[in-house]
Image 1 (tube, one colour):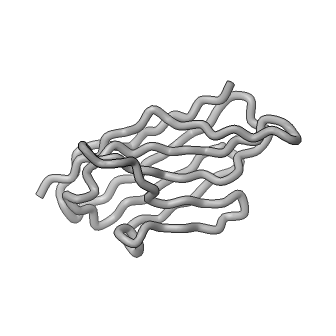
Image 2 (cartoon, one colour):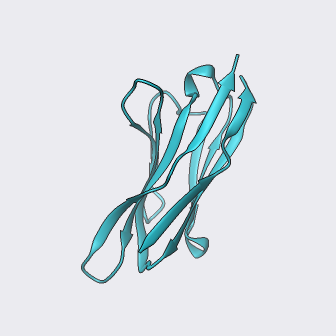
Length: 120
């Protein structure tokens, strides 16, 4: 079994910064692509940023230039540095990791989410 635990959320004023972490533990052969998603009340969950096992990154247009995704493979951890936060960034943030659990099997796992609230 694999567990993803997010941390780093909280309440911040507009213009401020937060750094989210997502730590994976358990039966992990290798972490493949990892993504951060957000879900605001009444809205669908959407991709914020993703990073491949090789370090290639992808960002939603709304966060380009403000957010940075990175990973530490030795620690099985992915980070989301969030700068210049806006009230519209308020949401629950989830990480999703594609985990290689054996040579031929990979499974998607989700974390439990961490709340980010940006006040105006």
